Amino acid sequence: MENKRYRILLVEDDRLDQMAFKRLVKEESLPYDYTIAGSVNQATQILGGEKFDLVFVDYLLGDGTAFDVLESIVDTPAVFATGTGSEELAVKAMKSGASDYLIKDPSRNYLKVLPEIVKNAIRHKKAEEELKQYPEKLVELVKERTEQLAEEKEVLAVTLSSMGDAVIAVDAQNRITLFNKTAEQLTGWRFEEVRGKPVDNIIKIVNEQTKQPANSPIDSVLESRGIESGSDHDALIARTGRECPISATAAPIQRNDGTMAGIVMVLRDVSQQREIDRMKSDFISSVSHELRTPLTSIKAYAETMLEDRNMSDEIRREFLQIINEESDRLTNLINGILDISKIESGTIEIVRKPINITSVAKRAAESLEHLAGKKKVRLEIDIAEHLPELTGDENKIYSMITNLINNAIKFTPENGTVSVSAKLVNNELVIKVSDTGMGIPKDDLNKIFSRFYRVHRPGKQIQGTGLGLAIVKEIIMRHDGRIDVESEIDKGSTFTVYLPVATHPAHITSR
Ligand code: ADP
Image (cartoon, rainbow, N blue to C red):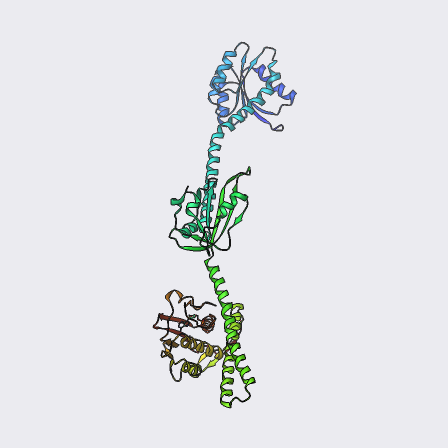
């Protein structure tokens, strides 16, 4: 600012005054680049083509007055100069737009104050301009902030609505202020219906086991003023009365001064985790059962044989046969567990070679004739001769087919029928295993291929681990095939396997 030079227009017709001004600038080294106009006419012309930081204008000019010049000045500060005793005139000039005035005295003392007046006039004009722009700037600023806030609000709203967890906020009086989409889905209430309502009337949490009302983490936050979680057995009772296992966490919403503006609570639907936990514990108990049963029987038969020295060869043979079958059961179970862990770790190996599927399917079906006979289940085998070769892992395909037939026999009561067929349909190998057994409930149909999943059959003691179909499905997928199941309760089930026949050369892969 100090180094800035000012462009000044001096409008003055008195030559002596002009000279006095020039001298002042020179002697005081004032930072002025000035132009001098000697009349209104000249001043108007100059002002039409040039811009100045300040116009210094004498009142009386040969062809008019300072007021004529003031008329053609728009944004430039103007200082009005007049002789002694014309203060009234000076006031009038100020009203007409002059920024300041100066009273010229005959001994030209006014020149001493001139630099200060110039500086002030320019400064005032600048401040005035800024002030003029302020409302405009304010409007702009408010607009900008409003847009910013709206955008932030929108981002927050979208984030909240796309969250997989239910988010519910309450004010200091525990009235609902926020309820996202997931909260609506989980509770069955819409935000419009619950806004402003006490949260306890809407969010009902119970203990899953006792069904007694559970402590809401919101109440705990009110006491502790810190983050709080519910228990591991919390369940939410939805508007419809439906119960859903949840994990609940709540945290205080604090203002800058530390007081509590409300509480935010997050509810997560944990039904899937609970289902997995249930399946795992079912699996552990069924595996231990599955291991114990054959072991108990092996031990019992072995002990009897050791104790009874006079046992007939025939009975001894029969016992050994049982021990042998039970050991096979154990081996199958252990192999199944190993297969599943290989599937989980992605290390199951498929050895691809051309397979004679007619012979593999026949062998698989015939290996279970004995079991079917023992259960008095008729086993019908219809394997087409000369089926085209399949490229794949013979052992895995064999075990996939036996697994399906084994299940069919297991879930079919006495005098039922299990049919196994294999044929070529539309260039695909179609293997069907149907039974006239107990069937599978509709709700379970898409779950039976999951690891450890077993259909809950109250009152029926059927052995198993829930691994068989998961392995079957993985084997089929690894051979680029698919499996379908149709079933009707107490009528029977049909599992259909589709496998592409050999189109690619034999090779060996491992993952
Ligand atoms: P597991 O037989 O060891 O229980 P699987 O994975 O082989 O396990 O089968 C999963 C579930 O599917 C079984 O618990 C059973 O209820 C059902 N299932 C499979 N095959 C049949 C079938 N042929 N008929 C009726 N239910 C079946």
